[in-house]
Image (cartoon, rainbow, N blue to C red):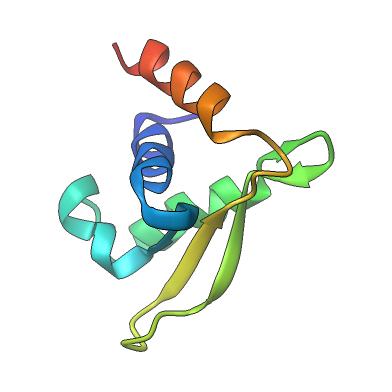
Length: 89
């Protein structure tokens, strides 16, 4: 995984209910437009135990991009947070 993908996962972990709007993460990740969509899209193709790591969760309320949800069936938040913290150190 790229550093951008790991940071995007970290933002998902820190969000309420593991759901974020891609548009709202632009400032945090420093990525915009199609590149930002590419980060989340590639995370949705990452599979753990035949489950997508991230799920598209519908259009954003503002109509600018998609919302994304961490798939806690694939991995629990606590374990993922520990792994990301270790990698990003």
